[in-house]
Image 1 (spheres, helix red, strand yellow):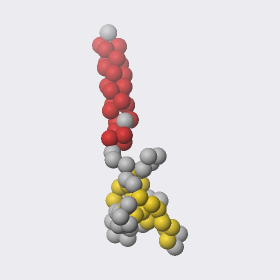
Image 2: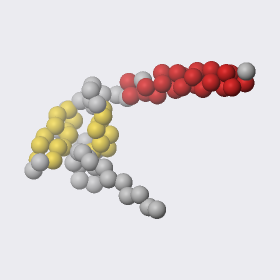
Image 3: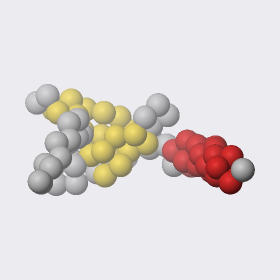
Image 4: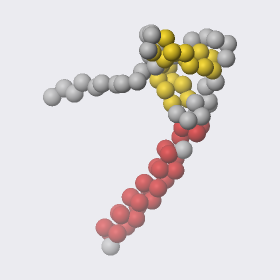
Length: 82
């Protein structure tokens, strides 16, 4: 009996989390501007032609622009220490 209650609770919790976190990106404002390809790297400029750094949210996806060099991050490697 308790096992069935735990499963029901977990399913309910998973459903609530899916609804909340699954739609979380829809709360982010869309960044408007244009992309520019420079030496094989992408940069993003806002409507006033200011370089944008950090997270960019478009209608289709989100992108991260390196704050140090202003280039879009396309591959992230994470070192795993053992």
